[in-house]
Length: 138
Image (cartoon, rainbow, N blue to C red; front, top):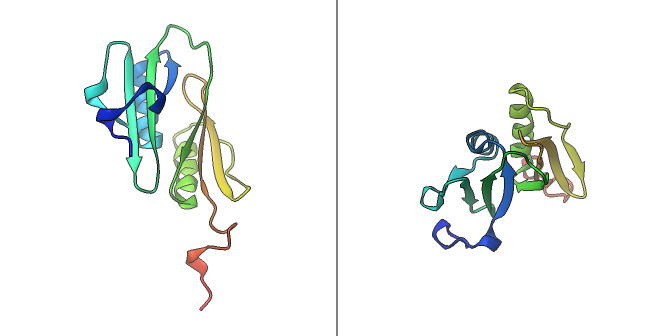
C-alpha cells in the first residue's frame, strides 16, 4: 500500500486549480480527502484518502491563474449507499449533480468541481451482482 511518506509523482493525479484553499475545501468536504501536511509546498497542495475498502486517492493541486486542462476524476466508494449519500449531500448544499445512474454493475453520480474538473463518485452495485446482503432470502 502507498503511504504519504512514500508518494511518488506516479502515485498522484495533478490538477490545476485557481484557488488552492477552495479546491482543498471542496475535496475535503465531498470526498473525505485530508491534507498530507508533510508534503506541502508553495503553490501546491497534496490531499490524501486511504481506507481499506478502496484504492488510495492522492491529488496534487497546482495553483494557476487559469485552468487550461479540465480533468476527469473518479472516486471509488465502498458501498452504493455512500454514493447515494454523496448525491444527497451535493444537492442539499447546492452543488449541481446528475441523478445517480446504475450501469455495468456500478452506481455512480457525476458533478463538477469549482474549477470545472468533472468528478464521479461510484461504487460497485451489489444488487446488480445478485449480492444484495440486505435482502438475503432465508
